[in-house]
Amino acid sequence: MYLPIPSQPDCASAWREAVRQVDARPGHEAYNVIIDITDPLTNASLRDERVATVNSFLETYDKSVETVANTIFPEALYLRHGAPAFFDVFEERVLDKVRRTGRWSGYYFERMTNLPDSDGKPINQLWEIVERIKDPKVKALNKFELSIFDPTRDVDDSPYGGQCLSHGSFKLMSGDPKRLTLTVIYRNHFYTEKLLGNLIGLGRLMGFVAKEANLAVGPLTVISTHALIDQPAKCRRSDIVELLEKFDQVAGALEPA
Image (cartoon, rainbow, N blue to C red; front, side, top):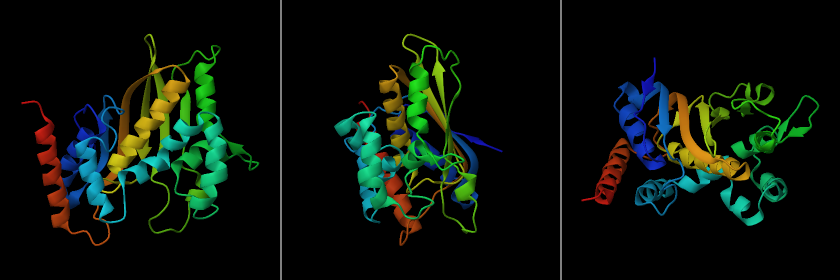
C-alpha cells in the first residue's frame, strides 16, 4: 500500500500535489506517500508567492514555514558563522533556549549533530558525513546514513508526540560534479502545518552538505509512512479548503501566459 506523487520541480509544487492526493483519500490521510522533488532549492523561500501564501495561513495559528524549516537546518546560523563554527553556536546559543526536555528539543538538527553514543558522548553525524564524502579514501557512494529516531529516548508512553522524522539517507550520483540525493522517512507527517517547511528545510540541509563537500544538489525524496491533512488548533475544514484555493490562484497567476 503506497501513494506515489508524480515528481515535482520544487518544494511548493510538491506540497500542493501531495496535499491534493492525500486530501482526496478517506479521512484525508494516506500511508506510505512517496514525494520526489527535482530541485528542492529552487523557489524555496518566502519570496515565492506560493510559499508566502502557506506561511500567511500558518501565521494565523502562530506557526510558520521558516520555523519548521529551521528545526531541520538553521540556515541563518550557517550563513552567518560558516562551518564547522555554526555547530558550536547552535549548541551554545540556541539549544538551551529551545530544549523542551533532556530527551528532545524539537530540533531535528540537534539529533543530526548531537546524538549521544553508548557512553553519552555526542556524535555530530552531519559533519562526519561531510568529512567522509570529502575523504578520497572513501569510494562508496551510498554509505551516508543519518539517524534521527533514538530508541533510548523515543520509545515511551506518549500517546502521540515525539520525533516524526526518523531517518535520512544521502547518496552520491556519479557525474562531474557528483550530485547529492537525499531520501528521508517520516513515521507521521502533518501536511498542512509541517510538510512545506519540512521540504524546504531538507533542501537547505542538502544545500549545506553539497556546498561543503563540493557536490551539486540532486533530487529529494520523502516517504511519509503516515500522512494527514491536519487542522491546526481552531482551524476549520473550510479554512483548509480556502487555503488550497488561494494557493491555486497564486500558482495560476505565476504560470507563463
